[in-house]
Amino acid sequence: MTIEQLVQMAERIHNAERVNLGASSSREQRNAFWARVVGIVYWGHPIYNLQPDTQWHLKDGGAGRPQSDDVVVSLPSRNYWDCIPNAGADGYRFEAASHTDTLPAVQNVYAPPKPAGGMAGSGTVAPPVVVPPPVAVPQFPPRDHGLRFFDALDEKYKAKGYPETIYRVDKEGTAVWYADYLRHRVAGLDHAAAQVAVFAAIDAVWAR
Image (tube, rainbow, N blue to C red; front, side, top):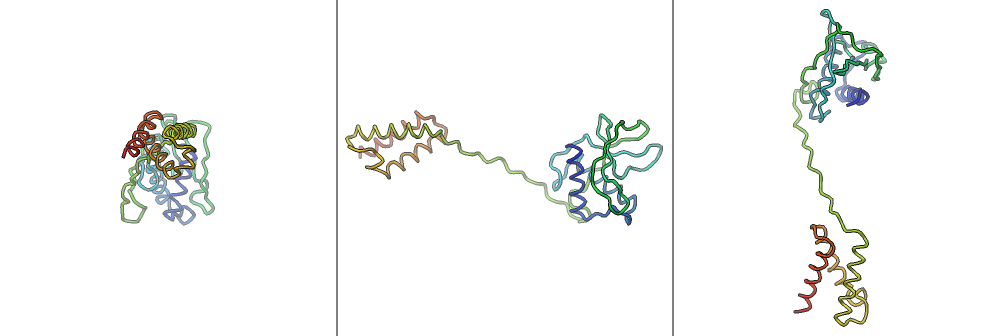
């Protein structure tokens, strides 16, 4: 996850859970919100983040100082960003501001706590998101294979003694036999095998 995606996720969580990080918020509230955001990124979450990314961490100020309320750190580089300019004041916003240096060693970096599974304060845990398997898309044959099939079908009808092309003497048959040809192709047969199968079916009909 990029830092930009992380900040976008933080804003999404903020809006969905109706969090206020302005002047009326406390440092503890802001710390709790930021720990939740980074925890959702780090551990994953059934609502907000299905792909955990363990590079992102919290930090404190070192020497017993509390958690920073809007800073995220990437390990192992120790690059860090302020993510909520003006947090603790009205008019705050979500925006990644990078620092040119790496985080000083005196400041502790640590993994965030695992967040609750549901919406903050909801008292419920959302069920895991089930991602359905990809739907197999039938692979139809190229257009020129269809033309080759129709040419061969036309020749077969001519050999049977029909004076005109199959398109005029047996429109229904044309549709049925081509549908069978497509069915065989989608099932995995190549052009030649599918044509043999269809022509065998035609011979069986004519033999009745």
